[in-house]
Image (cartoon, rainbow over all chains, first blue to last red; front, side, top):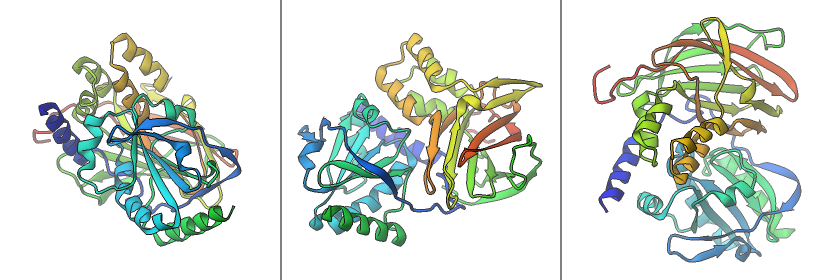
Length: 180
Length: 200
């Protein structure tokens, strides 16, 4: 318990020490990269924060954003609230978000998420084996999967999911992928 | 967190023949009295931006110590002139690629390559750094080989392997739609090793 408290305190301190994320004076483009030729997403089975085993393939039939992230990663933290708002706005249309925390354990992730009110599932890729299979360069990286579990789009780096351009683009992708 | 910067001057850059003539390097200082770190910015005409931000050794030490590194291992890395490095591909239509193996640290007239993530990981294994801590290290590093489409960006740490408060240059290379670009960032400075709780 004390360890957890120390970790949270340290995390809070570090949040103030990690240099500002990119784009403070150079607004980023809020792009979503369409991939040439959708390929099947590598399946995984990972435990969520309630210790329930979640398989990616259980999300078949939905458009899913799979977001790889970590608590220490500033752009990952920044996009969590706007991702949650996006999830709330589109969940009724069959849109899902699956957060995959990389390399951390419950003791780190659960207290950290008390600062956010995320309702989409978070699973723990504690040994980063799932992430390695997806061929990811760094964090955060998000993939959009169609209803058949194929990767159609990739988002490299953090985004403002509330950005109107990003939102319009994502809505169009969700509609397009739903119809496929 | 201060998000404003003061321009402290433009730096002269050196280019080899393939360097974009209109690439500009700027040095800015953060208005954060607690950290007070410098930021160097390279902008290419196409909209590709590289940034290097000093990390104070204490900052890096506490980051890795908090993730399972021993004090010895955390200090080894924190004292190696760590820079938070950021790439933004804000170009309209350029695919950006680069490999950190091609970058060179220039100090006292000699150049050496960056120590890449895999080499650090071998060192952490020798120092018995726990696996979970090594995973945190892996993903907090600036990815060694990168490819970016417009709108993509990443950040992570690199280490010049020089003592604190040392001046050096960094020769960086990248390609835009396959066309080679390079620039030498002059007057980079490793952060001083000071306790963040003390006055600068």
